Image (cartoon, rainbow, N blue to C red; front, top):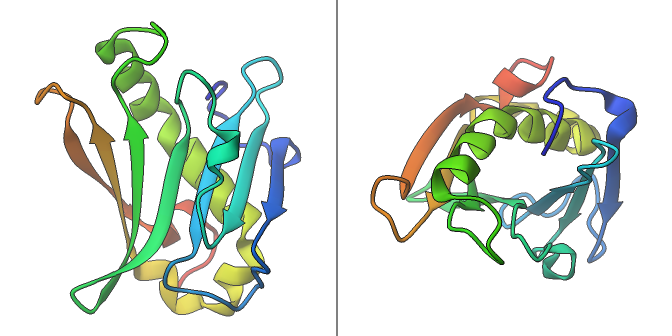
Length: 154
């Protein structure tokens, strides 16, 4: 993920699995990929992750709206460990920390009609899990609420 300035013209959205602007809420999944060359972000929305879009270096962000003990959360995952010898854990961790806010803003822009329909989701917490075999990088980060990344308020 490159160039961390939000530009809506660089966000491309694909809807899969008969997803609508209303359904589903719980289990709605997002796969966010990007182009290093063009700084475009690709947000795929469906009932399953778009595993066919994962790159060999595994630098995608995946998100899901989940029910955690009767509380709705938006939970995501990134793979910090190096794949195909692309960067050290520290480098990948630093890139994800820097770029996730842009990816989140792009995701909420891509699915803005859904979030307008469910304005009550603006206060839902956003948790991103950084996955690594190294305990130093295997962490959970709280990114605030969905409303922090949109112009909408509950």
